[in-house]
Amino acid sequence: MTEEQRKAFDALHNFIRSLSEKAGKDEAYAEDLWNRILQSEGVLKELAYYHDTGSFWDGYAIEGFHLTDILVWQVDHFKAYMDRREEMNRYKTEKLFVESLDIMLQMEKDPQPFIKKMREESGTDFDTRVL
Image (tube, rainbow, N blue to C red; front, top):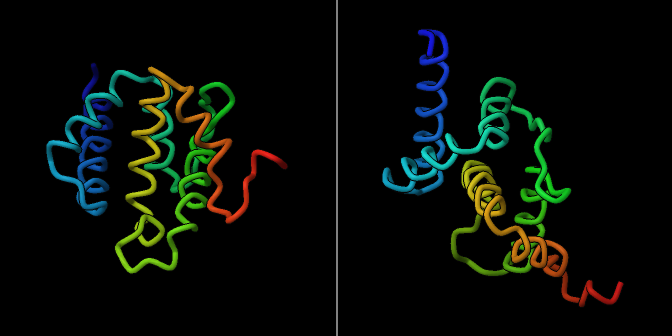
């Protein structure tokens, strides 16, 4: 690994630590997430692109689902809880992003439970499976 590559990895590692802290996650979570990201070329590229541009690359998909699909599902899913007082993901973009990366990593191992949820849970008050 070149010095430039090491610096890039260090920057991403620090970025994950910072995002995790802002998301209310502890250091152990951040390190676990980082180590799993290192095992996934696709998720690593998503993270690097977001770090560098502040936008989503969406060049990596699992069974047709991209990072933004996961983000949209999370926001949509939590709309059902908007009347509740407890802290919600919708107020923490860092939490949404970190958890979306985490979900994408989990989907690499077993995508079906998440695909089922994304297709069936919408945050609406009606059954979207009949639409």
